[in-house]
Image (cartoon, rainbow, N blue to C red; front, top):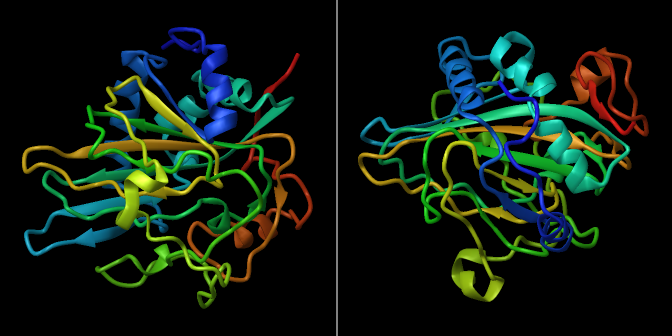
Length: 286
């Protein structure tokens, strides 16, 4: 498996990431990485962590499976974190002097699933604060633009955090075994109704093949994806990367994936940079 991207990231792609907060990156990962991640995902589904749950289950038993922070128990995920081009890709887009791995998350949709991801920003759900972040969203199977994750370009700029949906409540099969507190709104200002005016918000998404990815900032407004044709499923592996200005911040709304409990147990405190075995620095500028 190649630890270098299959092609160089262009200056235009780096510029687009900074300007729009999101950029499609076609043809970066080789087939071996995709095959490895799919094998890891199958193991993950057979042996989910205590953070796993079903986001949605409809009358035809079509589901959306979600899990996160599984990388330490799945060799294929761990190999991707340390040996794939992902950290170097994030570093180039961020212009960072060092890149720390934060966590992984997987999403598996049954063929024909109609559940749409609620529009949201990522940072309010994370136990960190900072602008220099990069999520790498990788489909492991082909996905059309109308079914892929959607974004509002430029919505990462500024410091505004809006009222968010409580993803911790998405579990029709019962309680979620995660450390959370009662949900409280992130902010008073309501999240805009993007679905009512997708053209006005300039919503974008792309057709993607295995080996492609989309990189985006954690403050981006994104969601609105997921309605699949009857014969089409979706498997997505994501990794979250932290650049130079990111520090720990415990948030009182305690929404999944809240890391405050594991950070505290590891001796980490607000204001510090995530570090240690849970949050390894994978890339450092020479």
